[in-house]
Amino acid sequence: MTSTITTPGVARLRRHQHRQFAPAGPAAGGAGAGARAGIGYNLGMSRRIFVLGATGTIGRATVRALVARGHEVVCFVRPRAGVGGRLTPDDQARLLPGATLRQGDVQDAASLARDGFRGERFDVLLSCLASRTGAPQDAWAIDHRAHSLALAAARAAGVDHVVLLSALCVQKPLLAFQHAKLAFERELVESGLAHSIVRPTAFFKSLSGQVERVKRGKPFLVFGDGTLTACKPIADDDLAAYLADCVDQPALRNRILPIGGPGPAITPREQGEHLFALLGRTPRFKQVPVALLDAIVAGLSLAGRVLPAAAAKAELARIGRYYATESMLVWDAAAGRYDAAATPSTGTRTLFDHYAALLAGRVADERGDHAVF
Ligand SMILES: NC(=O)c1ccc[n+]([C@@H]2O[C@H](COP(=O)([O-])OP(=O)(O)OC[C@H]3O[C@@H](n4cnc5c(N)ncnc54)[C@H](OP(=O)(O)O)[C@@H]3O)[C@@H](O)[C@H]2O)c1
Image (cartoon, rainbow, N blue to C red; front, side, top):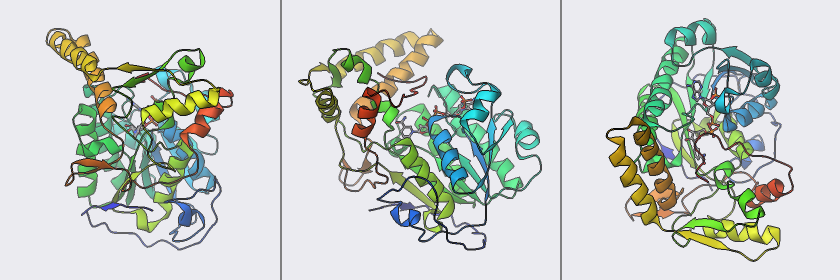
């Protein structure tokens, strides 16, 4: 089932040659199943796609999906990318095979035009760009301002469709990075360009931080009794396939698209129970009261009035508190509750498949700069 929100912006949809194709990549059910069976595609032969945030978790997976579907992909990256700037240009080229890499500064309009778009025409701007820290200043600089600059440069390059990776949590915005994302979402909708704004639920990497500690014999940490929240975790490749579907399917244009992974919504307690079951051990939980997070937020906020470093930590603590108490499911404002049934699903991979793969050492997560656990 796919429920989507249609945004009011009326876009001028370009007339492309229509062509059916059977895309490569993982077979998947749910929201993208029809698409991956070749139904409803609107394809130019090979669309020229300008990608931002290609070196991030979802960006990498999305570039793989786009290249596999035969699109021409140009990634605008920093000279040193990845967590802590660990990726050299050679590393980046190895991570993004089949794509063209161009280096420059996404925060600089001149660099976007000169080093990125280079006066060439593109069909689509696809962005997985996001602040790596979620800190207010960085969020406004990247999630909002850099996107505004990229939107202007993309329009000048002939782009008429923008696919934006956003986040489901912006539906209930309390944090600076959520407001920054929403501000750009609004700008995009009002731009008159066709847009697909994808708001996913939680990624596997954000729910896997405790695998190692539990493996080492420690209890699984939960806030409250572990049932305060729920989400429908989505795999990187399943989300990437969905973002690629947004490029290919006219039905996914001019919409805000909440999207989760397959199966029912799961709580943190259920995540822990499955992890212990995979390890063949009796579940052991340590309950952390939300009041503790409140006290940390209050203390850091107070200290943050005089110490900028404390203010930044206070925002990170607020982010932690948000995810400890808010579900990553579609919010039903009228009913005042989260609605798992109204949260669409796509893909085939479950978080528990991922836990099993992590335990077996077949995959590793890159949790990045703002991992909570
Ligand atoms: N984690 C979750 O559970 C979750 C759930 C729903 C939605 N989301 C949203 O999904 C989005 C992407 O997540 P992700 O995990 O793929 O992100 P990520 O791994 O942190 O990647 C962020 C990307 O943005 C780029 N970037 C950040 N700051 C930059 C700067 N100053 N200049 C140039 N590039 C910059 C990074 O480039 P470098 O490699 O050069 O740093 C990287 O390519 C975020 O908007 C997040 O809010 C996350």
